[in-house]
Image (cartoon, rainbow, N blue to C red):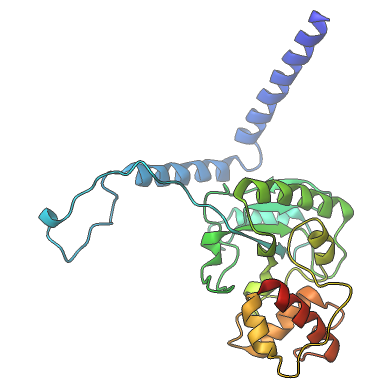
Length: 277
């Protein structure tokens, strides 16, 4: 029995060493090195006392001082934004995310086979949402975790992929205490500019506690129900109302993503509006 345990312990450490070596010398060794260098540069900025480039330029030095408080923390993500990659493989997406010229990234990528690849530390800001708005949030990159799903946008999401996503979301929700309503899509925060993830099983995710969904029994809205105000209260940017309607329907209707609200759409909108109030 002792020999058996020792064998498995040695096997574990051998596997761990192999994993570490493969990470440092594998296909993405060069970009991993750049990541490490950039992370080190940010750590130096954070350690600087007083902080670099944070003095008040219009005040003389003798009117300013630095005292380090002991009460602070690091970025706490409050939203999760889901995307589809619009690519045909995870490798193609990783290639884009590890090149400087594109300037885009996400925190996680989930392959069709359910394999999860983390690309950016949760505490850091990834470039996944772009120009976006949700409620009063106008910089979703700074307050969210981005998750890309390997999907062209015209195919079903695999069970393996969705199951892996649910596992990841379960950890993220618990780890950062992310509210149920704050699991949303790229189209939600960028109406008219983005339409992903398309044909996504939002209802299934909602049943697991990630994002809201409408009830099976719906009530008629009042005669004076204002659809634009309801969309705004949910979180949509209604500057372009037709685009906001389309984004809403990409998420909650899917069978029809036109820019007009049908009577059935208004039933759904009213039900959700009551949940978000």
